[in-house]
Image (cartoon, rainbow, N blue to C red; front, side):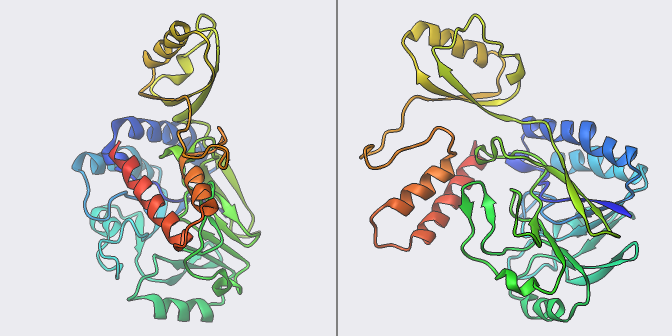
Length: 345
């Protein structure tokens, strides 16, 4: 049997932004639902962080999720196995109170897993592992060690994998804990990353600037062969545009309608022509940023590459800096600060 795996959907993200929800919906309506229907998929595993905020839900975000996602899946007769992630657990030290259980009880086709348990998907036993915290850590590790399942699916925080492009996690649990499984699939990190046995499948769509040009989508898993493959989301919301005295008369800005755009200036010899170029984008884009240079104290010692995202630049700058602080801790603080700043935009 083939099942769909999707994770880190973050309904209500970016403060319940209509722009982002419209972008999400295009993926579901044009890619996700049609694929399920055309290929007879009747089972979905949601590996966590279904909703964005662990503290509450915007009523309009909940209505959006029910009207555009859960109602449709129920009408299609699709069962959803939902694993609790860190964004859907209200408390940090227990999964007992969680958003998916409280908000989705009306859906008989949604099964919520707040504790580690073995579940049969067709004829295959799979170990479901929700977010690991202080309360369940000991019992979870005991179940992992004693499990005879070939596969595990969960919302795991493991070191050595990419949290997003340019940032490899140097904290979290060791991957050796899962050495007895043939395959492990996880949510939590939004970019795809694997070591040949443990697979972070990534979330369905771009949400922040550090996601730009990073492939997103969902995955299909065969319970008989244990093989899986990705179904990519072709839609983007973040775009880098490189300006090199580009003729504004010939530039077609239509593909950037309702997109978030960054114009990176490589060459600008005529200010008026550049302003006309920017005006064409401003007329259609949801948001536009212009990057003309990077003002660093010592540009000769630190080179910024145009292809790098903000977090990659910060991580590399901290790594190369001659400071006596714990660099990984400084990087984590900067990453969290940047993420919070993005959510305010």
